[in-house]
Length: 296
Image (cartoon, rainbow, N blue to C red; front, side, top):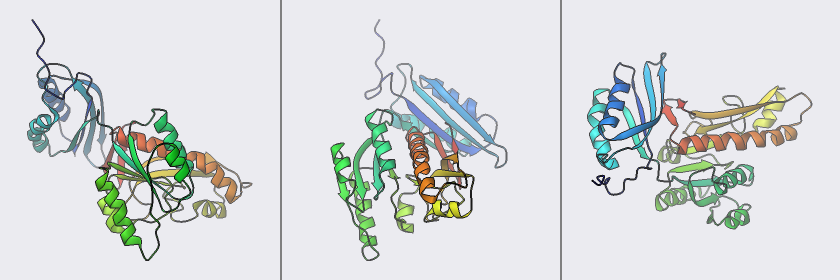
């Protein structure tokens, strides 16, 4: 007897990720695992976190089809709604076979861009990069050498609104899932921050919340710090205050000049940003007010 076929568009290798955030209460894990079992899926990986301070429960579950009864993802979503309502969940269900589409924004410093594109070409970032946008021409040859369209969108105080509309136009036209500010040295307007809420990651070259704003290495040198760092965070209307995804540090001494601190910091920035992007596209980051839960 032949095995019944799975629904069209469903493969036994198709991975899904379910993200759940809800008030902490008994029965959440049982309800989720029972629902997935009833729909012929198999849990591959599951992480939980109970925030005893905020009394919230967080859960990331990776699962795959494991039988003929597994429905298409839209039906899985519809069937899960009663459980979500019962436990007052905020939740997302993602088809992980779909590669997220990422728009990178950069200015004149290319180290974070170089690192991201290297990891992308090496297969370490499972994303599509349909475009790079910049307010300068400096990175064009490198980006186009990688086969990626380069959009030069100069910006000034006089044309800022129009330039940001062009960026949003690209986000809509190219169906962008995530915008990465890879040392894009412009402050986004509150309206653009709101439009990209939860899907725009910035790398700031300090260990936030210390040394927000411009020239953080100069600020750090003036204070005689013994460590410097970098912070990847979601962009909000409050400058350099969005939910933090990842941070890294390196020890320094009184002998390091601001230029030396900047040179050391570039390696930290690259590593921190790449981890944050990888975790975001792997659906390992859950935003919780001003913080994140990262199932790394």
